[in-house]
Image 1 (cartoon, helix red, strand yellow):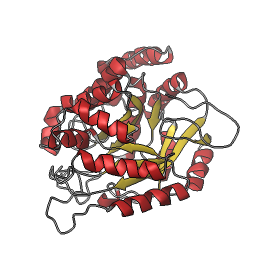
Image 2: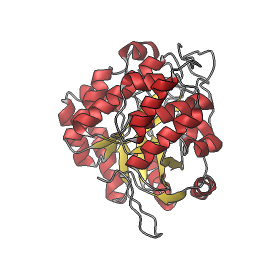
Image 3: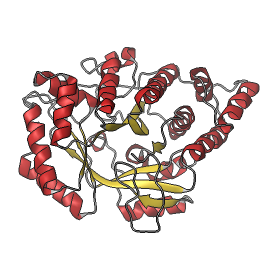
Length: 376
């Protein structure tokens, strides 16, 4: 990767960018690339925090209690960065029964969870009727649960297998109870990169089209970026530009999350993992550049508690999810899973005020009333 940080970035150029950020003005892709090359992390943090205060003023840091419910690990796409999938017919492939899924949702609700992040793989056996049935079963029994479900890749594949248009598929999923779509599968929205790390997956335009179509139907989503593999810094900026452009067009995204690639047990060899410094720099530049997305979430699962705390000084205003269960990232060796009390302690110790939210970024705890960013 051509991702080296340059010591010789023009100070005058940095001053110009800083002035624009503190004035609440938009920076250009060229400015973002300059910031990626800038070695002064504290100054990037100051700019990112200024942008954070423009969009989400105050010291509140939100979090949600939820479960990543991986209903199947069967997937034919064979993404090189994924340690979780098993190809169809593999002895370790599974599809949870309806009862197993309902038991997991019940356990989530019992522990105070409000969000079910329902994701799996591109399983050739499953068509639209499966999702309609299981979504309705979940919401019939647990009507207050929010289904934050299915990546664009899954939705596009379900539409294809079910011989439906994307719009028809999304309308049926919404009618069955789909509330919002996670930003999974974005990885890097540059087709050159996608052909290397996931050659059989949806293209950049297909991913964006899914999010655009969902937004037109009133289904909101999140956006994400997985970095630290074969992409360049220019690719990261192009990804951010595509996200910002779509947000300008139809505002599909409530939040943005970036995390570093976890190479353990995958088929995507890299020289070394992205450092915590690279993560913090990428987080800061994302916050500064994405001036139209209110909520920036830390990647607790991949970075761990210490870096997550520091990330709150680099523009993040959300601590992510207290994961009652998580299998995909953990399959690559990461086990940073703690409870809500520890989340709140970590947020307070970093100098912020913890507040529990739902998927819509509405505050739902019983302490003094406060306003959450990004409502709607």
